[in-house]
Length: 171
Image 1 (cartoon, rainbow, N blue to C red):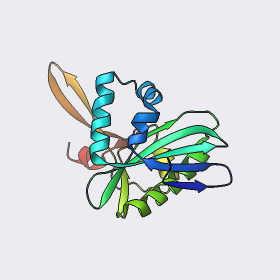
Image 2 (image 1 turned 180 degrees about the vertical axis):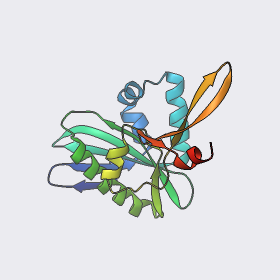
Image 3 (image 1 turned 30 degrees about the horizontal axis):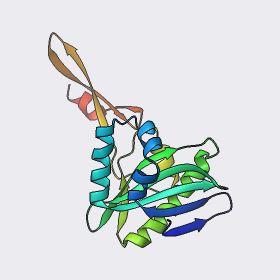
Image 4 (image 1 turned 180 degrees about the horizontal axis):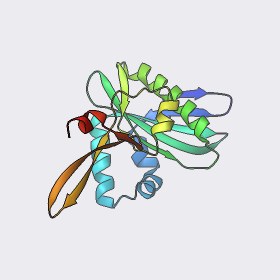
């Protein structure tokens, strides 16, 4: 049962309680994230304990994508579990649906914002959905010689290699 339905020209959204993810979509959720029964039950317990909303993206009557927004504290919620079910859901439609769905959920939850710990494959999708990046995961490059770790003046941020000039000046 949907709490809210949002209709756009090329898609519609159905927003329901997050528990419906685990009752109606267990098989596809487990398959998409390669979860064992134990892992699935752990995620189910965590998400149901936190509470939140499941947003289904439909094109026509076909379910094409899903994402969740779950409570973390009284001010913010976490965007998660983004996955595309059908090739009908293009990246531009997905990002618009993500933006509209998050806006609708923000009103439902009465919170200040939504954040995401997305992976490198979804960075562009998240940014296209009107999120902005506050921080990025930085991976430092190191070299190991004879069990000695040598930190190089290189970082990888959002799949881009960055040379740390300041570090080179002091070497």
